[in-house]
Image (tube, rainbow, N blue to C red; front, side):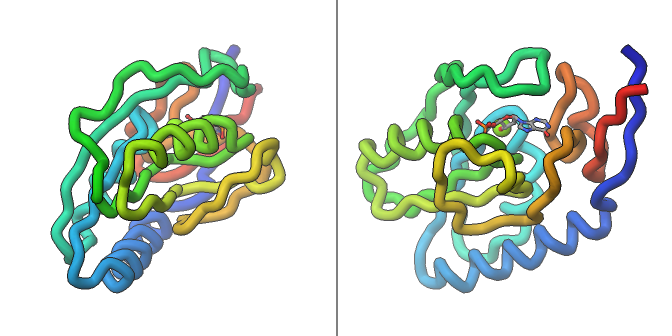
Length: 174
Ligand code: IMP
Ligand code: MG
């Protein structure tokens, strides 16, 4: 099927918002170290940009879960594909995600990470689609709330493509 991309959030808008979140996190974690947990692959572009703008000490780890195939709808199945390398014990953890949609992935993930004994655990997402929520998730830092449309770019994919777009776009199926 042919598709085209309509710009929803420009590169400048996204970068400015990430700068603001970075400043907020730097303020909130003054005197501490933050441990960013990136949810691959979608969260990777956002995490790198965010980490560059945080002024308190930062450490990073990565994990990969899957709940989506090539489809644009959640399967509801969450599987750990790659686990973290490091323990979360006594760390101030911020999970960095690309998007919270139904909330299934995050609610599962946060419950699991809570059991690993972090000192604190927060969630930071670039995008949030509140209309789509099925499971309640507390989001601590949000880049943008967006309408219920399928978006790509800045790490988000459609069938593994478009992650590298430097802006957020809506996929339009022609
Ligand atoms: P949830 O479990 O329904 O909240 O979905 C979480 C995952 O679905 C996200 O981390 C994304 O990988 C994927 N996802 C949800 N909405 C979109 C979208 O609009 N574009 C691309 N991926 C999406
Ligand atoms: Mg994701």
